[in-house]
Image (tube, rainbow, N blue to C red; front, side, top):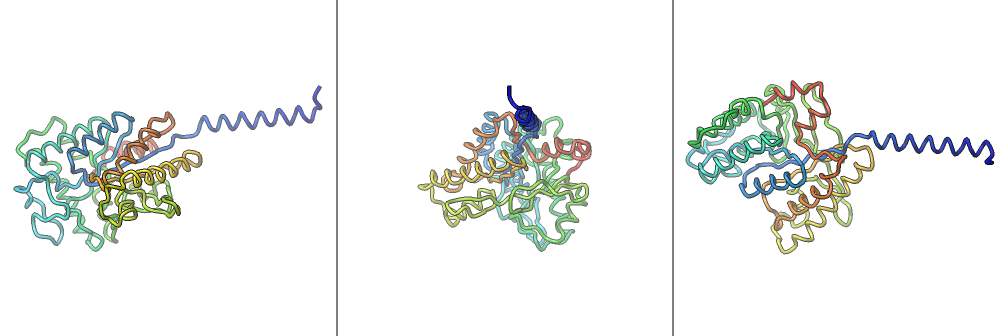
Length: 330
């Protein structure tokens, strides 16, 4: 027979082990928030939605409203302090192209994805006034609401309500915030802003009724130097912003390893939500989309991982605010 002291020790160890298992079983899910800025290319709309179907992921698309205006309709947009019909990122190729994009936007919204605002002309608004931002937000809302009509097409049933209430979040172009933006966001009634940058993954910060999200800086490359978890920043680091498709495999591997390591750090740790940002542009031969697809196929399919939109994250994490989030919009 074992001495009483050893029996007690074994029982205590078993108790601790059981408690650990229980704690592990009751841990919350690991959230991953994947977003796309711009949302222009029809081919990449289709590619992203195919990825979502394959992995169960749901994305946030930060739309630039100029992609709903053809060259013949471009003067309907006038950025603050700019001539009518100007944009830093161009416009839709044609009314047909804009209508095809609208069809993807509607399909995405009906299958659990989120459409959010990236403004319109992709100008750097760090020096804009609150009135400038109100103008930009107002033009986004007007173009978005009237987009089908502008392009000579019939809006699907439900579009008017979606256009009025479905856009809940915002990300500023270039992640370039300014002193007037906060007040403008508050007046516009956005549920969240995803324009920040943080040293590492962190939960959103509450700013009154609005949540403030920050893209994290994650270790990357042989020296594990931190970089914003966004494809454009990786593009600049890897190739100085010059396309080098011949090195696509190398850059895709580096990016995947950085994303995967950042994920595992949170998944095995405090499970802080991991945010990752992309564009509808295939930089360095599509290296960053390749890394994203590999990441989503490996991690978004896990039963305790939730690859969701920003809006769904807020609804799940702040259920008491669900009605307010649903009603918010810019």
